[in-house]
Amino acid sequence: MDAPSILRDIQSLERVTTDRSGYTPETLPEGVVVATSVDDVVATLRYASAHRIPVVTRGAGSGLAGGSSASQGEIVLDLGSMNSIVELDPLEQLVRVQPGILNSEVSEAARPHGLFYAPDPASMTYCSIGGNIATNAGGMRCAKYGVTRDSVLGLTVVLADGSVIQTGGRTIKRVSGYDLTALMIGSEGTLGVVVEATLRLRPLPTRITTLVAYCDNVVAAANCASAIVSSGVQPMILEMMDGNTLDALDERNGTSHGERGRAMLLVQTDGYGAEAEMGVIHGVVAGFTDAIEVTSDPEQSEVLVEARRSAIPAIGGRGVAFVGDVGVPRKHLGEMASELVRIGEETGVDIYTIAHAGDGNLHPILALRPDDAIDSGAPKDAMDQMFWAAHRLGGTLTGEHGIGVLKRDWLLPELGEKNLSLLSEIKKVFDPHAILNPGKAIVSPGK
Ligand SMILES: Cc1cc2nc3c(=O)[nH]c(=O)nc-3n(C[C@H](O)[C@H](O)[C@H](O)COP(=O)(O)OP(=O)(O)OC[C@H]3O[C@@H](n4cnc5c(N)ncnc54)[C@H](O)[C@@H]3O)c2cc1C
Image 1: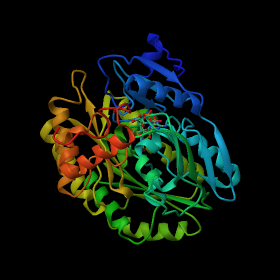
Image 2 (image 1 turned 135 degrees about the vertical axis):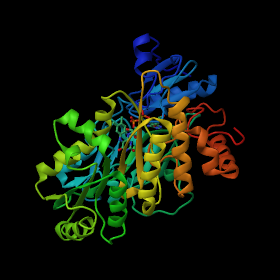
Image 3 (image 1 turned 30 degrees about the horizontal axis):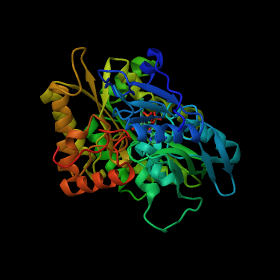
């Protein structure tokens, strides 16, 4: 068996040691394999399996849970160079891609055919499709088009022993056997390495209408978002940002959102009925605030969407930021927003709240002080309280970023012993020697 080519120089190791979560392992990984083909991935996993070496698969390293962080004894399998489009079929509205391609590059390739790839994480220009699949990434347009899982038709996966399987295929529907595609999606590199994906594309919307509304506070904005959700129309985008976030954005972009209100909703409708649907939404929002602006101008709309996309970097610009990811049933958005205000006051941690409100997915962002660590003291206490608040409301610890290493403490209360033990058994079937991203995504029951 040929050993893969493993880079061990400090520069290569430092490049792949962590993601954008703010978590940094204390040691550097053993080495890096920069894969350029499926054969490279197969060779790496065969070698690692034979020698029982843990492998951390890496896409673009933009994760927010420490999922692609790697330390002593581990090899990083970097898929960033496997980044081609294999096939684009406009008639079937699908595309086959290698895992390292960036999310935004897929939509760019589809655009000339009147198509787009719907899941659009705010990190779309610097996150890979492989990473999106491994975390079941969401984004703004997911309010209408669903998350990554709703756009993946099939996968090619290299298993821990180096064998290659195909899951799913090119059809929209398929019920033959258990759904291994769905199992791989969101498994955070712990069950196999995705080396190719068949993705569903959608027709580009004919029209887009955008509404911005400013509310007095984040709880009012969250309640307004819940009212939009239950109004019977389906916005493509329904995002929320609190006053702290607006201040950070204004500081970065020279805008003045924070002066117009202490929370903002960004709503977009698309398709032939965009204006009519926005009319209904306008009526709902008018019950909460008078500060409403509507535009059908594509450039103005893109400026507003881009502002939302840049919210996390803007907050990060004020210091180290840890991005939380709780989800709640959408009728409870107001209660969760109010819990976040309380948690900030009680723990003394500065919390900035942004949300994919249309999905009930809130990102409370903790602004850490220079001597703060995310896994101890007040920030850990704030994280703990956030989880329990979401849990009480019937929600979840993570809507789209995954567990990684940073959220394992709360898996047991969310999933329960029986589910955790099933997950461990499934992991053993796919990865009997526990070499794939060990210690991430799941914990053993009793831990
Ligand atoms: C400013 C900012 C904004 C963000 N906004 C969003 C957002 O709106 N929505 C959202 O969902 N996320 C968002 N994220 C988080 C992040 O971009 C996503 O989690 C993304 O899916 C990670 O992709 P990546 O290629 O960077 O993966 P990485 O960080 O490299 O890896 C993430 C996980 O996937 C695994 N993995 C990577 N590639 C593969 C593969 N081919 N096979 C198997 N496992 C693999 C890794 O082992 C790891 O567990 C944001 C991040 C930042 C920094």
